[in-house]
Image 1: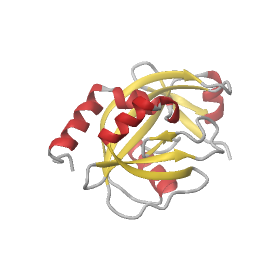
Image 2: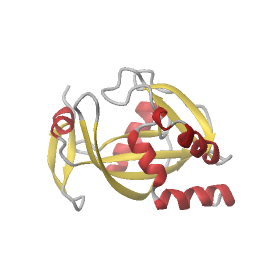
Image 3: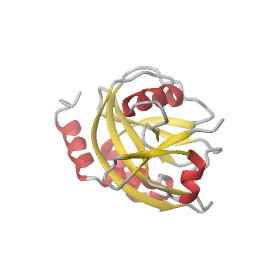
Image 4: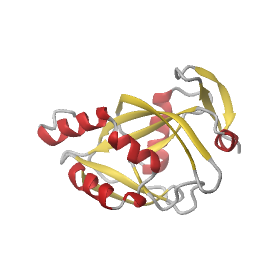
Length: 181
């Protein structure tokens, strides 16, 4: 079944909908989201993308990411995808957004305004094996060291997300006082 995602202009204003693969083949700017879920220990949930994903298979990424579909709000899309990918429900708050573009080896192009949501969750995660190969909880300090040592193991957008000044501030808050919950 075709999936239609929200296309946007440079100001992140809605312009219409386009079939997901077509948007990625043509490099059309569209709205996406990335979720960072933290536990009480201040660790972030990472997922290793399933090997059958259409791009970036087998690479580590943030907790969850996807696109806003036709007929749903961004918040609804975040909730839907967390449930689909991780088998959990988790309240999330949008913190910032950034824009990026990258062409992958397979010719697909991600051209996104990526809205970053932060969530909090403790409990069992039941990943969808069609989406997620593996999960782990890791401290931001350890994650940053691993990303510096082995950047090739992480998705393009996740590396950009982690360098955003807003993410740096969130990370600092979590590390210092955990009052972000």
